[in-house]
Image (tube, rainbow, N blue to C red; front, side, top):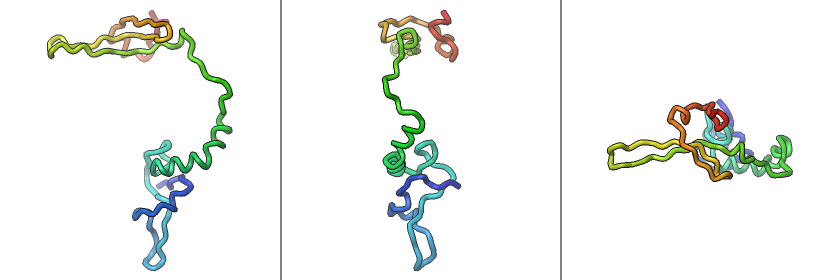
Amino acid sequence: MKYCQGPNCHKYKTKDRIRGPKGAKYYATRRRSNFYYMGGNVCSMQCQDDWFRKFGEQAINYFGRIHEPKKVLCDQAWYKDYKYNYNNGNDSNYSHFIVNDLLGEKRPITQAQYDDENYTINST
């Protein structure tokens, strides 16, 4: 079982956080086998937001604050896309493409090329 890492989790007044014997009740941090927020470390969006407000600045500084914009150059901007061609249920099919919006190019590819995770424009 894991505890929610939200710094204020124990302060939220919900029934599932109530613990202790009759007459000595208290609110406690949620404990579960798995959580669905912040990579499985917090119990809710509210606790995730609390965590980031308290530790976000430290985390960004520790893991690397960017000081200039990251760029994707024209030759690296290719991505796969598809379009569904609907024709009244007859002859409906998909058209597959490799696209580069920076260059304004859209090239047809086969479905096998689309499905191939290693396929790039340099593969042609």
